Every structure is written in C-alpha cells, then in structure tokens.
Image 1 (cartoon, rainbow, N blue to C red):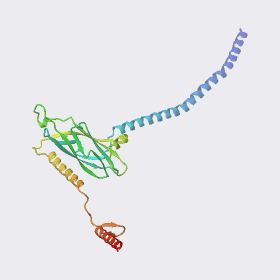
Image 2: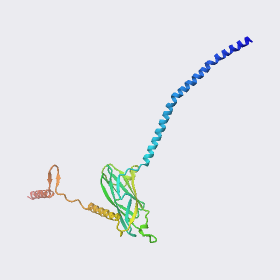
Image 3: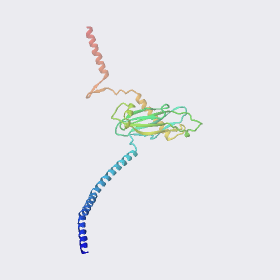
Image 4: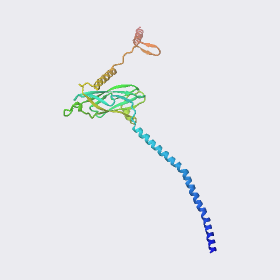
Length: 261
C-alpha cells in the first residue's frame, strides 16, 4: 500500500510537471493576444470612428448645400409676379425691373410656358455689375369662359428668368445658355396676376410707371448719338471737321489749277 501511494504521488508530480509548460504557454499566449487586442483594438476602432464621422460629415455638408437656396445674381421688381391689366381679347403689357447685384457681368434670359401668346422685350441681355433694365412683357388675354369675373380669372401661364455669369462685356446670344447649361441658375418663376385697369391700386400705378420708363429708355436707344462737338485727337489737339474739309478742298483746287496751266 505504501508503494502504491508513493507511485501515485510520483506519477502525480510527473503529470503536473508535464502539464505545467503547456498551461503556462496557453496562459502566456492568451494573455499576449488579449494584450495585443487591447493595444490594437482601440486604434482600429478610432480609425473606424474617424472614417465614419468623416463620411457622415461629408454627407451632411452635401445635404446642407443642396438645401441652401441658390445665391441670386439678379434683383427683380416685382420679385415673383407679373401684373397685367385684364382686358379680354387684347394684347396687354407688363413690366419688370431687372438689376445685376453681383460683382461680374451676368446674362439673363426669359422663358415662358406660352411662347405663342407671350413675348418679352428684350428676351435676354447682358448686364454689367450694378446695371439695371426694365423689360416689357406682352401677353394676349383670352376672353373668359362663362362670364367669369376678372378677379376669379386665373392664368396657367408662367415665366421663368434664368441667369448666367459671363466673362466681361460681350454680345448677347441665346446659345450662351446652351453652351454653359451647368452654370445656369433659375432666378425666379413668375406667375401672372391680372389687375382691373379701372380700379386704382398701388400695383397698377407702379405698372404704369414702369411701362413709361421702359418706353422712354427704348426711345432713347433709338435716337442717334448726339454730336458732342470737335473731336479731340492726341494730347490737346483739336481738329475741326469743317476746317479739315475746307483745307482739303483748297488743296484740290490748287492742284487742278496747276494741271490746267
């Protein structure tokens, strides 16, 4: 019995000695792996958080830009309506002031949903910084159906004003808006509002004033440039055109006299 107990004790010691390296190795490996995970884990997590936050911030900024209103290049007066006198069966006029409020030259262009019954004068143009113009809009008013009143008369016609930033002063051509379509901005969609011509109103008085200013500007453009007097050439040299013609005439007469002799 003593021999058996000694043998079992010896076997137990040997078994424990054999198991100890593997157990310690597994503990060491697990502890090292957990330590490495504890060291590398926060770094990977930090990079993942940074990339996700950067992506989300980019998405938010893109969404914010899309929600922000487009910066206006033009100031319109009236800002979003076109007032017309309600005269069924006649061609009536409206007016709108357009001013370039940007720091560069801007081209503008009209569009309408009824090109057969409406047209604009001018249909487009280029404005220098701070320059303004009053455009006239013509429209044929169709007779109402069922004898409806003017106040109840609604028009489905709409107008659109577009703008385009251009490089300096140049001649206006409508093709500018086709060539640079991605740079075109819609300034405003204008809806039609009819006014009773016999009923006084601030809108009607303003319309009459704008139409008079537009007509005066048109007549001024039609007139030939006035003679501003003698032309100044060089530094202080004044040339009188009549004196110049008289000297040429006298010189020609002298040459003809010499030829006859």
